[in-house]
Length: 344
Image 1 (cartoon, rainbow, N blue to C red):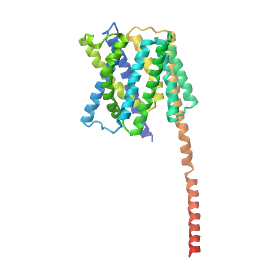
Image 2 (spheres, rainbow, N blue to C red):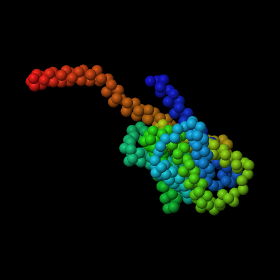
Image 3 (tube, rainbow, N blue to C red):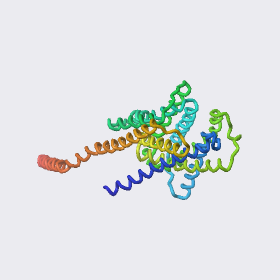
Image 4 (tube, one colour):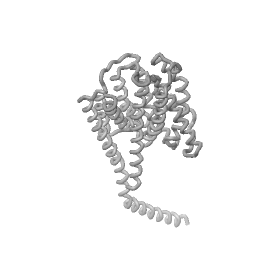
């Protein structure tokens, strides 16, 4: 049993490490690409369309060369998922545009309880007190180190609600589709990426025009901008694949909780590479968030062991059950003989 668990634990850690490294890397690349001090490429939705186009191309090549197998998933489910995912992307962009950074961070933190409630409603999933406590500690820690000014307006609040609900539903749907159709993470991504790429490349320029008043056709490309777009797309492939891997292996809630490790990494790298401000409030919040993640990992393992105990107790009674079954079989045999004699 131990030899079976070790490879699984190693592969889980590898999937999570890939997600953290690629997510942090893409944020750093996009920061250089989109910042006014960098290349000023302010077309986030269209860039996401490029990401999914490259991901779709990788999936197509993988299927054509036999590295991955294509399994059937109903088209209407793929379309439904793509709509939810695209609404999530647009909602996040609008939320960031219309709200203060503080309220945007609070809306992202609210995804954890929203995912918990949605999984309870959709899948009747329940959580232990330890898991709930760990989630609260993580939320408070990340909130302390990221939330600054908090200003709310009606349009921004509505966009934030749409973004949070659609993103939470998207992450839950990834896991449920993988289980429902016994499909791997990369195979599912290969099916959804072309639909998302096509829709985002068609609608993305108009969404970006609404956000910043500029069309991508008016942007002057440079060799540096092209390099960072290609780097961003490459990292996006690893980020998308690892996201599907992590949600398939863990759960949407675990993905959200552990995902805040990326926030801590981004803040730290921002301080090291881009001279971002780092004060006692940021550091204390990071420490609290990391402690919460450790508690969460412990709570999940404790919950698994608790759930495993009933099955172990059942196995320990096997001999007794066998004895009772034997007695039942013996008594049944006697009755059958007696009935046979009566009939004779």
